[in-house]
Length: 347
Ligand code: PAZ
Image (cartoon, rainbow, N blue to C red; front, side, top):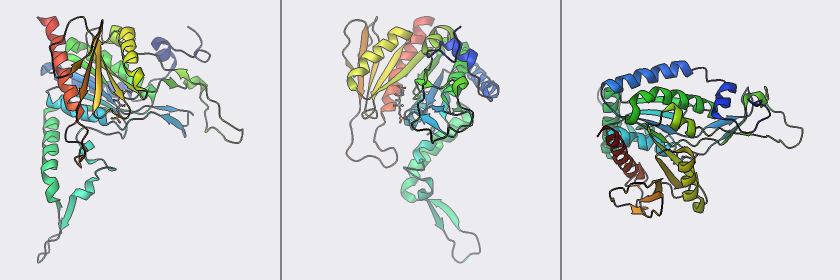
């Protein structure tokens, strides 16, 4: 094996042999194992949803880090629709990014305190009561009902990552546990994961000092973990969906196709940074024609591309900022494809 400090491209194996696991890995995976075994007993399909951006620390005593863009909206919204479709969800998200249900009351876009009113009870010595603002009650009731029923059913398990190293270790460990579900497992990899990282062996121990002019950092490439994930960790059985984010729309389809060729998984969902909330493209291999949907199939040769679009609204809903969320259609399409994937094996 090449020395980790001089190589710029790590294989997955080299990566895990040289970079330390997060301290809470065993504990986190113990909880995931219990969750999965409950879902197996109850006969549910399980989806791992990854969400939010990873960081790349520049120092061991970390003061500075690089971050990846993502609020976690796609992941948190999608998790809700998977739960609604009867899936159990392992929601692996960047610490403090959006989460299912509470996302509706994000502190920056829809602060919870703005929904509450204080009602003084005049003429009595009782303390004032807290009430929900009248016009927000229906929305809150719907979200709260869904949230409580998911908690009662025990179908949502959340876990957090911060760095790209946390993410990679957790992803591998969760995949190895989820493997017991075979075809009934799905992976929905919506997290925005750094392509570059600084190996521990190259990191400065203390805060990088200024005063020496400009800062030059050479980063190594994060290993391409989809290949071992598809062929080794999940034994080729899981239904795996990755995302491809681009800002140059010309690159979206070629890069999604290249990912499918290289890693051999089931679907790449391409999205453009500025259009991602109302337009995505499903790219998959097209050996067998899919039953027609309202999607726009433009598939020559070995790939099928299906665009999903929702209208861009002039007056957005104050809570969701849209009347319809594109994740509703994304999940409906994936549930349909996953069910076909499962039935192909068992029938
Ligand atoms: O979290 P968000 O809703 O703001 O953004 C979602 C997204 C664009 C990060 C996601 O849809 C995605 O494309 N994830 C993969 C990004 C990548 O290519 O690494």
